[in-house]
Image (cartoon, rainbow, N blue to C red; front, side, top):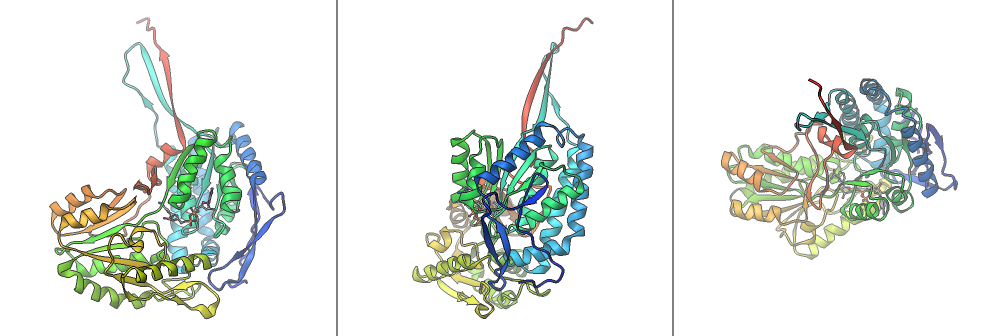
Length: 492
Ligand code: NAD
């Protein structure tokens, strides 16, 4: 299937600066969720290919071809890399849309631009961060220096393929590490193209390698590899837990995990702007087909305003009917594959079986296209113990619950294994600040949901993961701290 003219799709791995098929020659078909047709073949890499990529990365780290450059020189390369991403923005956006089904308008305006901005930001930051001198006695000088960790393995999911990769490779590369990236088998195309653009920008061969394949066949060997020093993982909590086990089973590599979410969105009866709150709740759960880790999938509305809130929410839903994501006006595209569509529909069935009230949606859509689409779906009358409130659906499904006072809202919001994001809507300063402090989440939004910036950390409490992406804090994940004590016998 070739639906965008001039788009070349290459599914070969990128190891040591070169495109190559898996050593075992295995391949798999890359199916587009847009219409169920095969886009191209992808190299089905395994432990042998991972080992080649890790060796290339290690070699490039040891000979200092990248980490030995002054930070300002790495900065220049990363800024060029960012510029190349923007220059190839249309191509990358088209790949992302075909590969995982997101609307082309967002693939470009959100995914391409965020990934480019992230690479630029860490590049520009790296020659502005200083090391430390500790306040020790006069007889000593203690230098505290950040050193690149070594070879970093990166494993990412399919929902924002370029952005998730950029959040990890940008700080890791800026610090001077060498990287082996394993993209999701469901959306590997842009990661492979990014590696080519990085080389073109001046990232030396071997420093940034991309090895596609399935989780068990290529992800596990990377997480278990004895010569990988750190691993940055984004994905499900189930696999994230295995990543920590594999790190412990092998060489105790540093493991950082950004995992699932079931974020609460709390609307008090003194919400300062009901229209804005409804728009944010509905827009955020249906953005990216609901396939966002931070989607506000549990909506808590004060009983006093719930009817008015839901009436307006239902009026907005038709805007989010799925359509062909290649069309410029589409706001909701296809979910990533047939398995994901069937999983989402299974949760919807479960919600009905357990007694939740289906307000809208609930069905597959556009089945005649051969692609995988789900109607925007809202359940009312949900209780916090129902499966659709407990488990991350990762699709366009909203679970709505009422509450009577702020204590009940906070208790329900916090009664969950996840703690990625949350939102509180109230015009009362004490309520807003008090609830923001009480919520166990890595990010709390007050009277909005969509603010986002590379300067702020992103990550979760509880089983939403370990560590933070974005901001200067991300450097902590890809550096080791070294203390150097120097004795000073001063003659004066
Ligand atoms: P997933 O855990 O199934 O897969 C993620 C990656 O891990 C893929 O590349 C996959 O091939 C690989 N993998 C699978 N099994 C593996 C194994 N045994 N060993 C090593 N690697 C393995 O997740 P997914 O379905 O791709 O993505 C959806 C999940 O990602 C959701 O739970 C979502 O919340 C989460 N997510 C979290 C964030 C965040 O920042 N917290 C951001 C985006 C997505």
